[in-house]
Image (cartoon, rainbow over all chains, first blue to last red; front, top):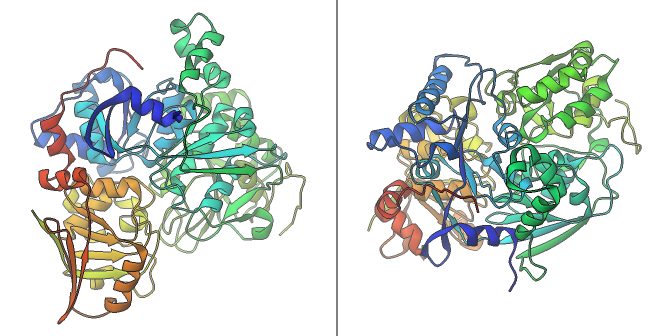
Length: 433
Length: 184
């Protein structure tokens, strides 16, 4: 019987089978941020085990609240910072060099095809775009991973989602993953690894693939995963050029992780994206999805463009293109958050930041803050946010607030309209509020 | 082996997420006990008042996909800080379930029909208790003289984690540090 991508990665990392259905894997990298790592650091220290398995394979960042907003968040940063120094963790990203972890770490080349990586954050699944197994874990799993370099998982069960057809203009990876979550539901992929396949995925650049994998956890998935190809090689080339004679050789080597033609999946779904239109969530679950046109006219108080889902350069380009030379609605507070300093700098060079500022947006430093109501953009009771992030849970961006998830194009158009609206990039039905 | 649970509270919801269990605004705490007052503060459930309804509660019974969303182990810690060491549900999100066992707490999955039957028979009644005996593999749900016993099976790994008191205890005894020279 052939194997899926995940099964191949499991085989290559197996340390122990403590039970029939349980695999303990060795880890190629362990990531941490200042919210879920400090409790692991303190717990290990309490047990007299203030050690790490390999400082070179541990990467850490302060990203959720940065710069610190109060004494408590300052302490979280300090615990992480002191620990990184104490253990010689060189890849530690502090104020000025820090950004949203699931954008920053791949940007630094820390995720490679075939890797097994964990982090104490559910959206670690984003990194599966590189053909890696990258599940989010809790703090105890993280503590063991930091100390031992291992983590336990159930036998992988893969679900194949084949994306066929071609995306219409104005329809993006975000709309595709909203369609997927809407179709299979918030527990449609629980205890499964979603393997994306098909010409739509092949045509997507790495940023779009990351957006796609990012929200697989919204369907309960352990992680998303894409087969590593020439685009993966191009993205990683500056980091891997010493390992291969040329790009073709790297692509050929990465093909070992491709699924076998006779690999077995617990479920296979085909989605033709050709007829897909821009989507938007309503209510408090990410599987509550409707076409934007059906929600058009819903008044909004705030727009957030950023996060590990849609805070990348390609997202900012699309959004800036829509607001360029225009002014956002006077009732709307616009917040743009480039996900890393590198993206911020590129957006500055390209004039995108200028576009946003001229349109009336506030451009913040890279942070996760607004997405989960921790800083820089918390909603008040009864307020509504059009957001490019990943969760619309009750209270997510502030107690009593409502979050509508959408693509950067839709968010930018909504900022101009002062209400949910389709972007001018989408040639389909365009409604005005 | 141990028993889990006691005074039980029914939460008639699917998809209770970890943002509802412990909102992100409290994730600036680094100690588990500090989470105690905030458990289920954002739960979207008609008429639910966490301070009133969780007083003395030692077990929760809910429907499908409990603990979905964020990986925050703070959700399991906030339950434990309030004396809740048993959650019975028709299904769990993977990370939350693993966090529970990793902390030596019991996330007990039962078929949706069983959960349905428990809701019909016991929900809303005063003095309901739910106690899981891991050794015998029995969940006893009681209200006055009315008792329902439901058998359950835990995997050997989950049992081992509960016996050890959690994954850190288990892994520390069993595994060396895996410093790797080569990538796969």
